[in-house]
Amino acid sequence: MSIISSVASTAGRVAHDMRSSVHRARIEGERRVLERHHRRALAALGARAHVLARDGDIPAGALAAEIAEVDARLADLAAAGGPDDADAPSHDAATAFPMLADGD
Image (cartoon, rainbow, N blue to C red; front, side, top):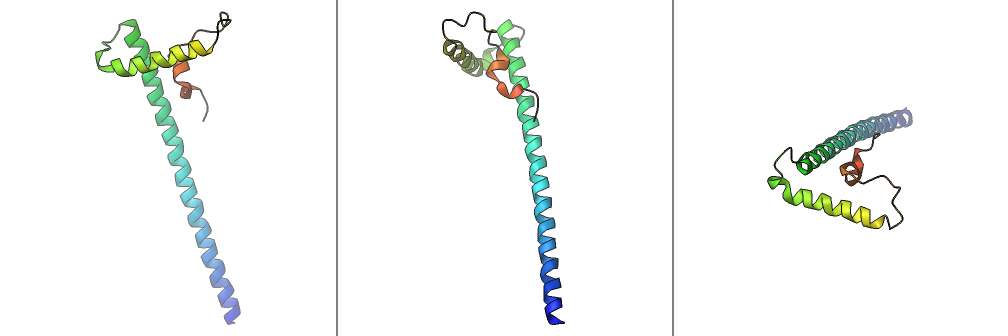
């Protein structure tokens, strides 16, 4: 009987370890989804703030460094497009914040 007890005990430990691993993986996956949603919300906020500051609807003084960085990225994107890029869509704040794309 000791062999059967040993096998049953080992199987019980393995099953417990598997349940714990699955639980940890589920928690980690949920945390990553929440982080992705948070980054997307921050990106949307940043894109909206950029548009509002550029249009003069909000004072841009407190965001001057961030706006300059976004404008520099937009200029880099425009320069990378090349001279025969006349029929391409114009770059906007959503282009500077690609994480705004739908989907997880």
